[in-house]
Amino acid sequence: MTCRAVRRNLPGYLDGALSTRDHMMIAQHLPGCVECRSQLEGYSRMAALLVRAEPPAPPPDLSLRIRLAVDQARRDSVWHRVRRAATRMLEDILEPLAVPATGGVAMSLMFYAVVLHSLLLGVPLGAVPNDQPIPVIQPARLEMLSALPASAGRQHIPDIGSDVDLVEFTINAQGQAVSYEVLSGTPGRDTLRQLDHILLFSHFQPQLSFGRPTAGRVLVRFDEYHVKG
Image (cartoon, rainbow, N blue to C red; front, side, top):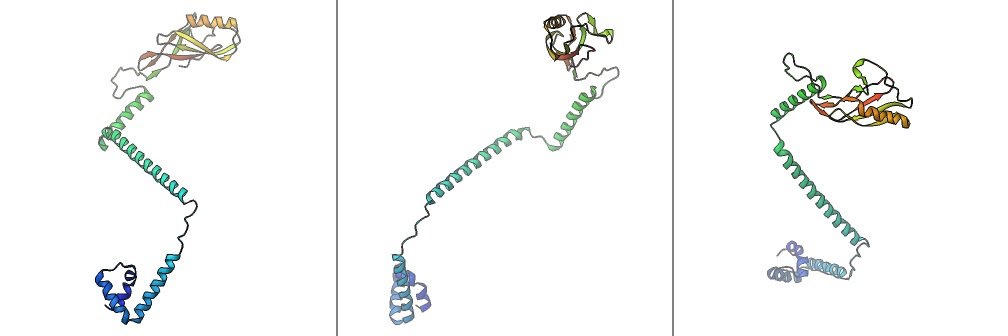
């Protein structure tokens, strides 16, 4: 065995980590080679120093840092699992609703065109002659306030006192006022009795939603009234 091979295997020879054959070949080489013996002695002294050296003490907060790192890794793992589960759930919900891109865009554009046309103009697409436009929502309106018909023109409401300006009436689907709220003014007892009388004997047109009567509201100003659904 050459000196180069011997020196490369000296640490293993010293630790007893070589095979029996290699160990015997190095043992036969060392008595006749001063340089290899000198290097082996250097390894021996270094091993003796390492045996006597005390192991370094771990940092005082090492245990805490390990626990924090483990806890953070667990939280990250849980968040990763939750995010993956949420992604899969969203895909499962949206995938059945997906349509081919061209058909979906075309149907969406057609739908929005019909809805916007109906909302803004109140006339369906392709209307035939003599059709009457029907808005989607027709607000409730006043027909007769107590004994004074609304169709009689712009007339003053019968005096119910100077302490009420604006009243909101709630109208049911049958066109009857079921309640009211004074929005402006401080009515007295006599004024409230007159408002109760108006509530019972006035007639309203209910709000129409797609042609069907529904509940709504009417604002009445008691000098020159204005109607708003």
